[in-house]
Length: 365
Ligand code: GLU
Image 1: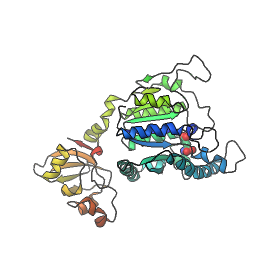
Image 2: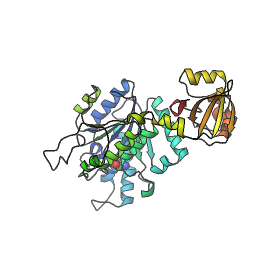
Image 3: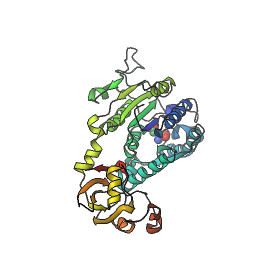
Image 4: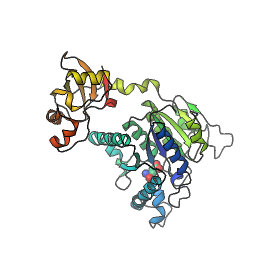
């Protein structure tokens, strides 16, 4: 398996296949796959649908298409059931992140999500993400978990996205109505023709369909994230993946885009300030692949907010050695420069991150 950090999206049809609350029927094989990935040193984030489906029987509703507040109540009660259902398949702890598109659009909240995921993964926790259905209005919603999973893959710097549902992959025509339909194993470029191959979903409990899966794949591959559409009902799929085979449809990551983020950081993103380092920190950043800690910072120039890009300067030569996205504003940085990470809370009253610029957010110039 050629990835380090993957997002696995699990659809409602797998969490609640009979629409009668949560079921372990398909989750067991998925959980086993996740555990094997972790044992192989990979990091996994789950994006799980199914809160509405899991809560459906617990909230009275007269109609097959319940009102939005009724669905929100279903999501509220179902989310608990769904999380408890996942947790029973893992020995490691699971954590819950409920987010909306509004959270991902807001720079500060985006960084908070990124930092939280990073810390959870480094503590061997399985983050389980869903849309915060009970608070999200249409304008603030991603709307479907396929696209949400792609956004989570972006915010978490994942290099692979697995979308698990009840279909083997992308077919050239709808396999439910056409027995000649052929599964397409590999897609290099997402074109209009690819979108045309995607029918609409027939599953009454699922929100997305093939179209939202392709949209998600498009977002991901453009950012260098390889994306698979796979049948999560078939445990052979996981055996195949573990052997490095492709048992469904893979959308190849845009190779140029794989380095695009670093390129964007290096060439496109305008720096709003300068962070100046002592020799030890310069060595750690340039030769040891380290993140930038507050202790090695001697001066700060310019005005910048948390989440903005800064130039990283060697104090001795006055040259730019790197660029990166700073976790702290210049005001906060002035107060913590030269200090140990463990002192940040004491000085600022809070500690959103132990590092000032994380390695993933940095490019050596
Ligand atoms: N957030 C919804 C739920 O948990 C699912 C959305 C989707 O399946 O795309 O029920």
